[in-house]
Length: 328
Image (cartoon, rainbow, N blue to C red; front, side, top):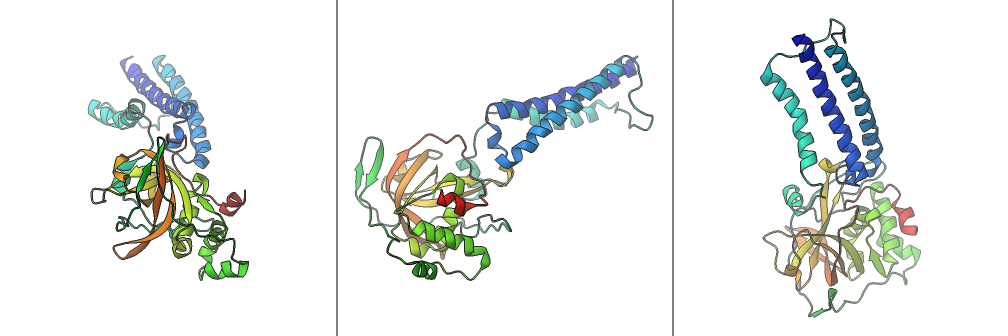
């Protein structure tokens, strides 16, 4: 009888653990917190896994009852349950611990702490994802400071006098093709994106095509000098940055938060020190060039910075049809 109860206890414990994981996934889905861990295209698989875990848990619960009643639940070829308390504690503890961490710790988006651990990338030209390939080249660090104009604060947002913006309306298609000429077939889409962006009075970096826009600007940075730009993100700062510098960053997620990579743009603004880490801001300014350790990057000389609430979906994801998104 004691052996039956021991086997029943093991199956009951497995039932509880499986139901715990299934319930946790359901909780994340219901509270819209699943997006903090999984890319949207992967969510359907995780939700299906929750259903599968629930079905397996039901089977384990049924086996626990059969074992308690003294009925056979498996063939003789099954590995018997361990009689070692220490081994059982370690085995089940490895499953219970992440479950407890998930339920007890708050669900929050990645921020400056993780960006510092992974290293903020300030060059996106080699980091966008296409249908055929995904190549990531990181460039950690900050550019040299650039002169800042006089501040003119407002109640809701701080502003400075804007610099003249570049215009692409006076360029013919042939001239644009010459400006955005590429030698590699992998950069053709970036060239097409660049030509569309060049024609706009203000480049609005949409979250849906965040990486694609930044990659195109970074690849053809000389063509966009003086162009007006607007983007949102969280404030990231390193100790060696000057008082008029911080980075506006976002995490790019391909599959899940484990592969999240921080990308950002250096901001030059007179009162940059007033914006604390992880504050979400909307930055408007003009594109300038800068260097860091001999590497060319582009920066934004901000003319206005406005604090905003964090978006419901804080991460950015690969867009396989960026041209369609720009045309819409």
